[in-house]
Length: 251
Length: 329
Image (tube, rainbow over all chains, first blue to last red; front, top):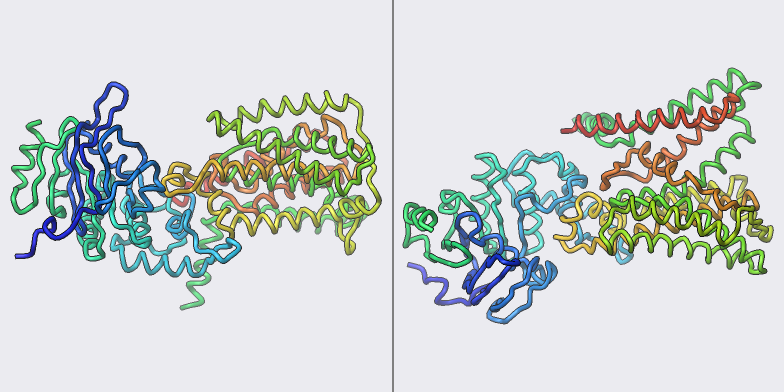
């Protein structure tokens, strides 16, 4: 039996007693949440439970009111996307953050173009690396050319491009907010497979989803939220899908 | 097999990839027809004459330079309706400074700075106050148009630079119209910038989906400010080229140029929604407008025919581009 990761490692990212209020709405109150290395965490809960707020705080889009955030045990400020990116956090949105009017290659390198000293893009290296990344990492098929415009791709293919981008740029943590909501069944299966495989590349993930079956397939640990609080935190081996369902529904 | 796939790629490109292919086809067809017509009727349709070419190249350059700036801005997802007013005002500033004794070689850069500053102000208004640039620049269009009249009065402002300046901006270099060489040079620079420099990639990114661009860490405000500055710079450069040729400038001289520039961009396959377009498209769009104007002049058609034909061309081009985009889906 392998050692429990918590016993041997410090969390990649940890939130302690974090609260967040939007006007009159208390979105989060005193939330503790952490992600270990090589771990897939399922963040579950009904609408309005505060799941998306957790994602936004971790990606630096909104800031905490109180509490603290630690990365590898060190307190950090997440004031912008840039801050979270510097820590290796990448967010994959429902509508993947891609530009429809640009090619796959250009999207993968958007903002991080390979250039010469004068800032001119090295098209051929970008194209060939993009091809390798897509071929090796992403099995959601049907992408025949990296010069295709992203707008011409299906929802699943877009997610694949966004994830390929995150993997290529050696992220540590992927935050996936309802990644399967726009996907067909087969694309969903490939995506879940893929998230599982990312652990072997030392990438942890947080999967926000309504679909407990999807979460149960890939996650190592589940955190159930309700009204801005954590109500259940359990490793997969100590729970069942029925039990999880009960916790989500009961609140 | 290899050959087959390569041809397949080219065919796919021609049939579906870029709206610019359509306009290139139309442009070349019009050129071929005009050349054949001028060979058949050399006395009544002097399309191939040296004089005609020189007039056409001079005329297209002014709109072309303006359109390159407007195009980069449109690709970045913004508009500048004030480039016509900017054009007049920066020309007036340059001409006045020259009249006061400053060398045109010093006055022209001042004119360019005026153009850039007007562009940056537009960017500031639109981005800082988060108002549509269409509205912000409608305001500045009226404002700078009024300011040009306020500064200069309604009369023409003469611009009498040294002959060296005139020949550099409006003369002939190696037997080719200098104005056209400036247009071509700027097109090449814009092509490198837009399609091969990382900044170009950022223009497309912020124009195509500025949330996505921001999410990936591109400073979309700064990128758009740069695009506004380029549009302003191009307006002033076009003004210098035009004023060097005519030797004087009127405060209302740029009126309507902003719409012609937007028309040239749209004819060249740029989308009003931003994020897509090519420098070749802008080049062809501007050239197309002036080819039509030239043909109508040669046929001695009254001036309003130009608006009729450009209007038709504009709408047909947009319909074609829309069809191209739909077909790809």
